Image (cartoon, rainbow, N blue to C red; front, side, top):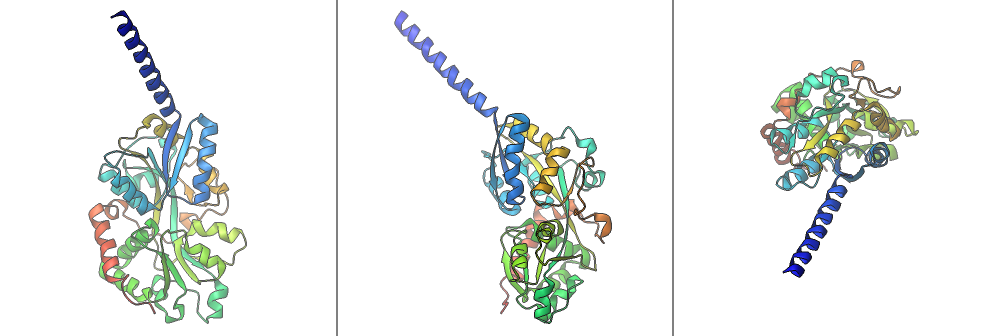
Length: 342
């Protein structure tokens, strides 16, 4: 009996040691699902580790792919934080209890306009304005004018010269749909998309992708967020940025705490850090020039200022509603995507 008792005691000690080791390991990591540009995603881990000693494991997915992944893992989450991407899917994730509200420590320093637009659903991380990227040389070679408005995109001169993302995978593309619906009404918006669909060379998986073909001169027009175009323009690519004359929409990029996160304390620490001025400046260094949510973050001159553009009053809550969002994307997939383009 003495031998058995001693052996049991040793096993208890071993089990407790393993549990302690596991607990300590959990205390030193946060799993982040990242939906911004690759350079920006890759900059987060080293900076957060230096600031806190906590490791960051990052997986990059476009916004709608990220939402699908979180939804599939809802019962047993792999990730602790969702960083970046358009706001509509973040709002949908909150409404479907995939994520939960967390008030970051610097909440009072965040843009009041951004907070008012989304309420206590997710944390605003940045604002990005939807527009056109233009390669004037390509358009000139084709004898095509520079488009100034959404309805200009139907001009047959742009045949094969437009790229935009697919809304089934890209939050940028869904923002375009929601913008057009708010500008023109639903049926007319689908007529507008139908009219320029025949000019689309490719529907890309991610919203940032058109700038690559634009910079290479493979297309003349890319529909995407302006701040994603600034980096390529600064690097010397022949890109100009146009805001549609009828008005345009915008995103409030999201930062969300995953409900049931296994490293919740670390996730909250990451979110607190992510909206700090120092962390938000990482975006500029990575070539992402969206307007940061923290009003104390020093800006660089290339950040598109919402005051300089004709913005619609984008209804984030309405167009982030899961049922409406699904219906609009399904309608696009059924009515627009299958149409011939050649």
